[in-house]
Image 1 (cartoon, rainbow, N blue to C red):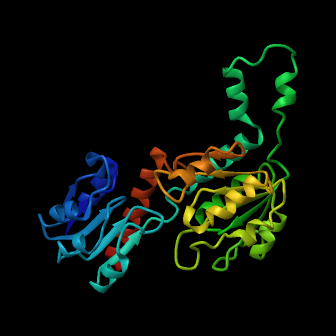
Image 2 (image 1 turned 90 degrees about the vertical axis):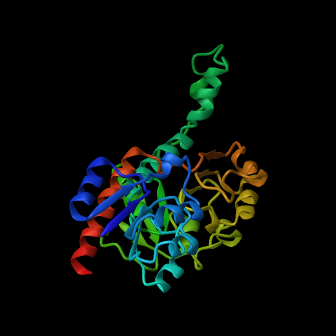
Length: 316
């Protein structure tokens, strides 16, 4: 079997593929500076009778899929195969594999880092220092930038998959109380309390959104839920912007009905003017969709994908 890889793959991972398959061609999308467009993928896929195609950020629609009639499997190095027309692939009898949890550690670490940064007013304090405002009084900064500790806070997880579970394990050592809403999962750890969705918003000091985008989650977090949040609560979304009603969040922040928000995802990327309205707010800590951007994430997706391919080969 021949394999085409456009996802970033480390050398050890490529060598492992080469030991298992007849031929492996590597054309990382990074060489292109962006994910391949369908027509560009079609040109690559036409070159040989590939059985397996491993992608990450490319646009894999029916144009690309039809370019390779021998294709039997598409491996997607992402938590969800959102860049692939999975319905069309399934119609063609092509199996889809993905790599859930590949960025769970990275996102969890950034969650902790950004919550502490927000609570301790680190960015504002640094700017104050850079602006040379520390002039008189030894305790000026101590009083102006006094913040809060993460320890003792109740964190409510909306969605308790790989990312939520990684965050929860890290928060235990602070310690924090963990409650979660996930109709598809029940955790055995008695320290994590399953609660109704409304309870997450009513009783949490930090509301963490850990949801994929699908027909049931799109726009799921709206005005009614956000209005239930405590006035000193912080809203965190490092998953997908489409699950949150942007207008409802802006309204809550403008009215100071909640303490603030920590955001890594936006309705439009790059942001439109409405997104920038969120980003520029003084009670928002915003980052440009980088929670999962670590070098180690690529190593994780290589390991997970190769393990899944090994299982597929055994069971096919």
